[in-house]
Image (cartoon, rainbow, N blue to C red; front, side):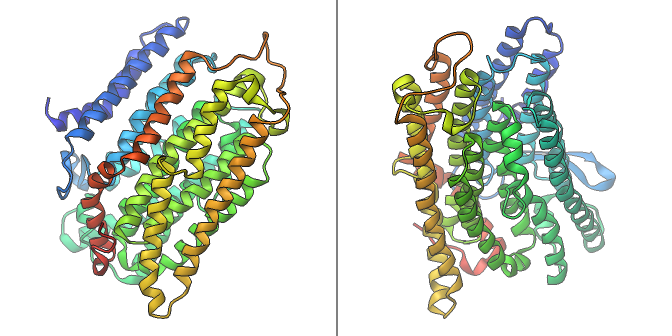
Length: 515
């Protein structure tokens, strides 16, 4: 099988799995879970194979497929891998089977429908990352709303309808603005070249007046900023996380939020480079505000899920800070931080789900001394806590350190020219690490230490982690440590694509931050 065929199979395996699910009886949930695990496990194997075959240092797309779809509009089914989407595709494939394994005992209602939605969501998320045609990207981007809406709305908590409507309205508003910008770009290509095209590579070559770029970037940026989410467009996230089932929270934190940051990286900044440079001070300010405000809100929460939800706002602020550093290490750090946050936040949400499944409470005040009651659980929780703080040798340290290094390297020449503001913002971002340590250690201290207490579990004594749960968490910890200890492999895979990103957005800074 060629690499291009393998990439197409990787994308469509969930569709094939969903079709096979229809043949299984609803009364046999174990078959549904087993088939879903088999499909997503095979997808992970394919993703890992393509990752190792991906050649570092090669320009452009690899394993590319381009087939006419709506020829009259210039729309193609066009997918491929590059250094910008490679790690995010691997992350999506890696989390897929862990999400299904984590839902074995927590999802007992409409099991077949739930797994069908997870497979459909996996298909749309991978499609969004792989799409190299703007029309195809938009179709996948919008299709993601459907399964996520249903996962929260059907299997969520008591206020799930409110949370789903808020999630839908926020994201739909942003998507409408992006659609208007997409249509404008399509007509611009037609007027300049005489032939319609939605190919992202063609759109990069468009010559647009700066006022037009500013207007179009606003449409794209609002859609992406809502998905990240950046302050002040973040208020849908805590409600969605709190009401979502554990699997929904893991997918949301692990992959869906990265759609926004990837959108800026792949489309927003490269399509409108002059507007991006004009907007850099504003975006950098909002990124640092998100870092500090998200961390501050996490510090005062007593709902465990809300603590992790607000921490996501803070951690993804670092991603945005790295992207607008336009520095090689800063942008690479942003990509590593996306992957790290997916692993760490996904693991923390899984652990919240595990204790909630036993005790049916997310109130931090109801727990204490779990290190005595659940020693294995506590070890894994502490490891994820240290990764969230950014302890050296974890992926969290690699991502945040590179982002801050890139931000300072980008700000220092401006400071020498008399512009203090970027350096002040980079310095303020360091405070987010301190606040991150405060809210995560506060969470760990109150949850794991002190007097032993927990809400009365249903059906007997409080049980420690099962082998299935330990296997899920061990896989996450292994990935976190691998990225933290051996980051150079990932940096080599992304370097050429990030240099091309610099060339499109700020060509005068190409090579800045070369190791």
